[in-house]
Amino acid sequence: MPPFPHGRSVLARRLTAAVAASDPLPTPTMVVDLEAFDTNADDLARRAAGKPLRLATKSVRVPALIERALAHAGFSGVLAFTLREALWLHEQGISDDLVVAYPTVDQPALTRLVESPAAAAAITLMVDDLAHLDCVDSVRRSLAVPVRVAIDIDAGLRIGGQHVGPKRSPLYDAAAVSSLARRVVDRRGFRLVGAMTYEGQVAGLPDMVPTQRAKSLVVRGLKQASQSQLEERRQQVADSLRDVVQLEFWNAGGSGSVESTAADPVVTEVAAGSGLLVPTLFDHYRSFEPRPAAFFALPVVRRPGPGIATVHGGGLVASGPAGRDRLPSPYLPEGLHLTALEGAGEVQTPLTGPGAARLAVGDLVWFRHAKSGEVFEHANDVHLLEGDAFVDRVPTYRGHGLAF
Ligand SMILES: Cc1ncc(COP(=O)(O)O)c(C=O)c1O
Image 1 (cartoon, helix red, strand yellow):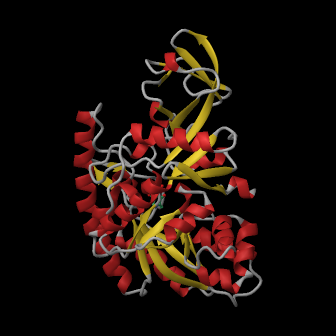
Image 2 (spheres, rainbow, N blue to C red):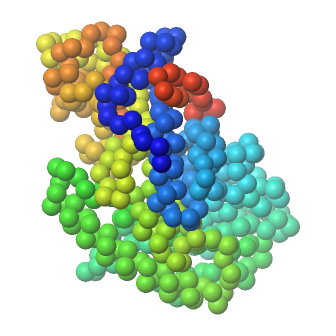
Image 3 (cartoon, rainbow, N blue to C red):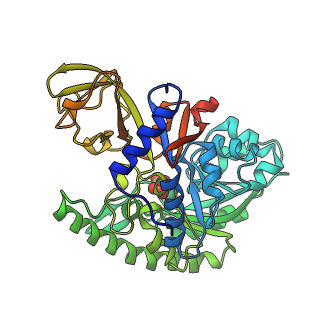
């Protein structure tokens, strides 16, 4: 892999040069560093060790960047977050292998799916309940177009009577999965083609946080227990499914677990998205080196007092359990902090710290978002940084007028 120019000071110089050379920019100014993005894509492929990576598009939400990732060796197919998104990506010719990662009850979108043989051949729906099949049947007038489905299987850890992991599919053991699989296979108008086990408690939990050493140790233990329990259970489920159906794919994992997920012989492909842009929630993983690739700039609009600079807007807060780790982080210039009282505000965000004193009205402050794709819901386009210049400006989903 080519060496990656690390360090905030290098990025600061590049951003400053790119801003100086461009027309005045609307704020928030979204930027993706293509050099970091491409290095991250190569690194994800290296970690997957030959297994294909299915792109989790919710973690990108910029069509041009989705296409760029899919053009990288090692990436193949899309893991979409809604059926409407999958239909759009398919219509645009961006992919003809799309798995919708979460069950859908969106009747208008299902109607479009069952009325388009081409879309139905390209898109796979996720199910974990017969009610999901009923939803499909409720919109169709004929069974002429078979609908591809995959079964979502809970990938959580069961320990001491507790369930650790995302609360998603009710299907846990081989008997429950096979029972639903048989019902799908026996039902006219459906083709069971895949399975998914997303181990969020491994893929989505930082395990090397410098300020939380004790917690990180516990998380690492939990991840190890999860992986070995899951590997055993995946094998059992796969063995019992083999009597029912020949699957095309078994999807699992995420950016934080690429190598351990890929190592499981049952898994045929690994999902990844956040590892391309590396938001702050992905800063502290033992398994990979974080290279932040997405930034947004806000202008300083006031100096309420010495040592405080206030930027316009700023409340680009990430989803999940509300907490400080969901807030955007001031990144450049260095030495800036949010205040406890206002945090990242709707209309303004005061910043303190040693860097604040040097800021003047009109200066830009660069932030990183806590999560990967959500940040792009706040702007219509993204500037692409290569070397010291913005080489292109591309629309986000929002810029395309799309809200998935
Ligand atoms: C089903 C599924 N697979 C994979 C992922 C991992 O995506 P990422 O690589 O962006 O963390 C997620 C994230 O929430 C998910 O819901």
